Length: 250
Length: 250
Image 1 (cartoon, chains in turn cyan, blue):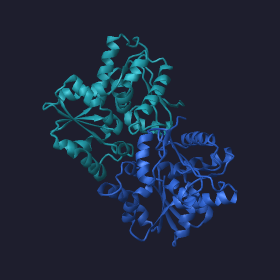
Image 2 (cartoon, rainbow over the protein chains, first blue to last red):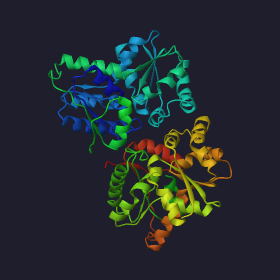
Image 3 (tube, rainbow over the protein chains, first blue to last red):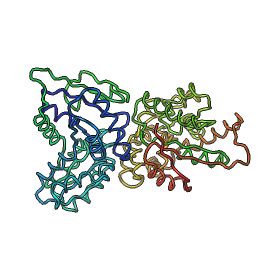
């Protein structure tokens, strides 16, 4: 949803279809093969809605499934890893970059690869933070418990002298305050949502995919489980009244 | 697996088929409808293996799907809620019982219902502990973080004067030490695994379903994701060498 919000802000004339695979989340602890299968099922459902571009707005799915999706789909497919890596390189001064994410995203090595493909000499320290997603989902983002957890995960990165940290999971911006407090003011946090929206906007322009002028944009929200609780959370999170959340089975 | 171990110990001549839906766990945060659909898919797969009895060794699935499974299947179906409730009533002296579980299991009201069906006057205090499953899965079972989390969840139950606490999720026995430490020695913890195995043994005897004598039992382990990591964890947990873990897609 952090990515959805950024794209909707940057491309206000485009109609967006959001698909949340709420029945099968979290993806972060699943194997590569299972994430690829689920990502392909999500993509099939969205393609049937006649989309012109697909954004994989999940770091784990981007890390494991982006290539498979790009190879098999006829529309452009944009992930969040590459934009996050570029944003981090633009901000780091000492070329020591930390990356945090799910077990899947970190073990895939996707961020380290993306960072070093752009700049081979950059030093990358990656750390899986599996408890951050459940903490964020429970709304346990401030106070003693998340601070202790952040401490346990992040002290090692601090000791490595990083000056930039990529929040390599779309849930982590919710824990931004606690993470920043743990790392101190000298470390810059990078959220890939904004940079991903920039990439999407560029792609839409370059490939001449922009919506026809004067057409009223319409956003749709699809989820595979519990549309009511999604609606409750998203209304608060997106700060926009949602027309409807549809349940889809796939 | 706590339930598997108890059944295998109590019925050493029976062949067991274990199915772990590792691709779609955790069930604890999913809606009733989705849990029922997934439980029915699991049951179909096991029925195709010609089982004579089905144990729903998950509190959330037992809470949401037991009735639907019992109505639709031709073999006996045993859940973990009823045995857990009976075990708690057998141990409580002051008739004030606490129950902890996932959001799904607690919101379903299944434990309160089962306890008060057997003994209408019993006082039940239920508390969802959504962070306990990820803590247990991460092996974060001892030390400051789980202690703080347990404190936040359990102080309210302690204030209600409970003398017995049902561990209403098959992951929670891994956090037993921390939970006991938080509640103090006067509160008895009840794990439904043992009592479930007793129920299974009774059912097998009463319905004359026992294995033919002299047949060598064979256990099978099926999972829907990541058989290797399941094998690693289960070897440690069951303290038995596993022959093989098979991946199944359903």
